[in-house]
Length: 459
Ligand SMILES: [Zn+2]
Image (cartoon, rainbow, N blue to C red; front, side, top):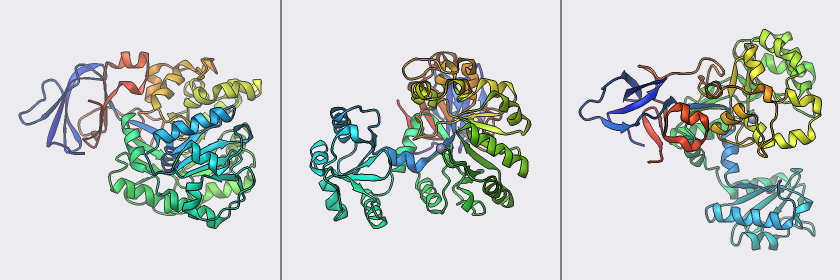
C-alpha cells in the first residue's frame, strides 16, 4: 500500500458526467476536466464509473475471519456429500491451518478421528455438530490439544472450558488481513461491526488489525450493553450499542428497557437485533418507554408486518436490512415460514416509501458477504433457486446501490458523493454505472482506494 504524491483518475464517470478526479494525500482535490499535472500517477478509467467506496452497515469481522477457515456442510444431504465438501475445503485452506467444519449432523455419518484424518490428511480438523453442543476432532487436532473424551462415533459432548481454550489457542488468531483483502475486492471501504462484544478483547483485535494495516477499511463498532460506557480504541469509530432481542427467548420488557437506558446514559444510540414479529413489537414498546433517537436502528427487520411500517417511520428509526438473505435463505423461508408472514420478510421498498431510512448490509459471515449480490437481490427479489420472494418490495438498481453509499454514522441517509475535500475512499468499476447496474456483480470492481491508497487492483 503506497500512495504517490498525487494521482489523477482520468475519464471517470462521476454522477453521470465523464471527468477527471485528482487525489492528493488521501483527499479529493479536484473533480473536473483536464486535471492531470506533471508527476501525477495517472489511472485511465476509460469512461467507467467511479463511486464512493461501499459501506457495509452490519458485519461481524472476527466471525468473517473464522469463517474463512470453516466449511459449512449443512446443505450436504449424506456422508458422501459431506466427505466431498471437507476434502474440497482441505484443498482450499492453506496447509497447516486448522479447518473448522460446521453444520454437521447425523446425516453425515460417524465422525471418527480416522475418517477426518483421511478426508484432510495431516491437517487439524474440528467438526461442530449443528446443535453447537458436540465436537469431533481429527487425530492431528487431538495431538495438538491433548486428551479428549469422545464417544464411539467420535463426538465429544460437553467440551469443558479447558479443552475449548486449548483448541482456540491451537487454531490461532483469526486472519483479519484476509478479511480486509476480501472487503477491498468487493469495493467496501467502510463497515460497522455489529457484534455485541461484552468485553474489550474484540475491540482490541480489530484496533490492532487496523493499526497494522490488515483492515484498511474505516470501522465503526457497536459492542453490547456491557461496553456501553467503554471508550472505543482510537482506531475505531463508536457506533450505536448493539442490543440483541433473542429470537427464541424474549427478554422481559424491563430488561430491554434497562439495556436501552444503559446506552442512553452513555449518550449513545441503540442498534436492536429484531428478526421476529414478537421481537420487533417488544423493541417498539421499549422505544416508547425510553424515547427513540434519530440514530437508533433496527437490525435485520426480518419480519415487519405491514401495520408496523408506519410506527417505525413515526419514531424516526432506521432499518439496517440484508437483501442477501432473500437470495441465500429465501428458498428455506418459502418452505418454512408461515405463508402469512412471507410478504413481511426483509421489506425494503415499502419502508423507503414510508420515509424510513433503509441501510444496506450483509451480516457477513452469516449472510453472503457480497454487497453487489445484495443490490441485485434487492432489485430482483429472487432466491438462489430463482424463485421470487416479496416482489412488491423490489427497488430500483440505483436506489439499491445507494443503501451501501450512506455514511457509517448515518446509515440509510443521503448517499455520499465524490466532491472536492472528501476522503479518497473510492471504487472504480470496469464499465459505466448503468451497465454495471444492469447486472450488479463484484466482478465489475476494478480498483479500490482507501484514503488514497490502493487496497485492491485487479489490473
Ligand atoms: Zn449480525
